[in-house]
Length: 97
Image 1 (spheres, rainbow, N blue to C red):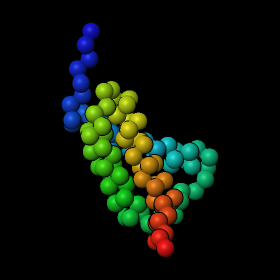
Image 2 (cartoon, rainbow, N blue to C red):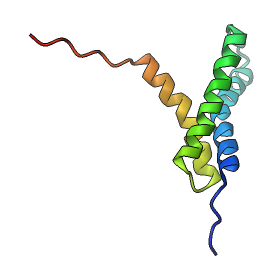
Image 3 (cartoon, rainbow, N blue to C red):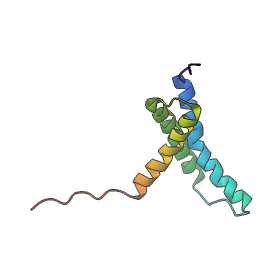
């Protein structure tokens, strides 16, 4: 039995789902623990979330994941990687003598 590769639209959709999944889980954990929702700048939050979702979908298409599970994994990884890179910015090289 040969697997048919996912088309770009499917890859994009699975990647977008992967990007949203960590946020849904984060809010679910807060609600399940009875904690209040964070006080965020909601318009900015939604704008950044949409950007992350679209970039994750595009990155998943570029990665050419073979299965929906891999596409979700790639989509979930992109926001994490970007956030880590922003928080831990590399230091600039110091000018030589």
